[in-house]
Image (cartoon, rainbow, N blue to C red):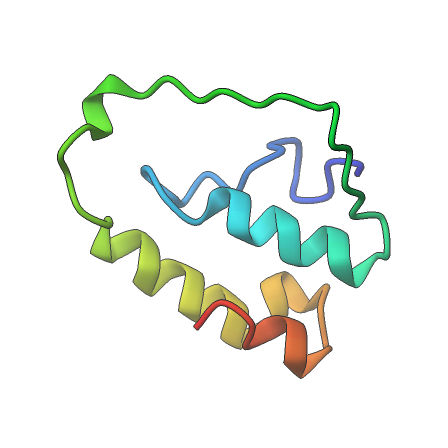
Amino acid sequence: MRRSNGGDFFHPGYQSHYAETEVTVLARAKAVLTHNPEAVLIEVAWEKSGKGLHSQDRSAYHTRAGQGFDRRVSNKVLLNGFR
């Protein structure tokens, strides 16, 4: 998926959660999401250990989803899929 938000792959407004969720919705909307059972993704984020969900990120995600992620997604099923 090409960068379409001014250069950042992930929206810079997220601190620790929901950036991947937004990218997933954008990829689904563009029909470019794929599953590769051979792929391995490892996230090492020691600073997140033991912490709960970042509530400001959750709020930012819902605000951005309500606006269709800068009007790039109009499918309501996708926009409401992670609420």
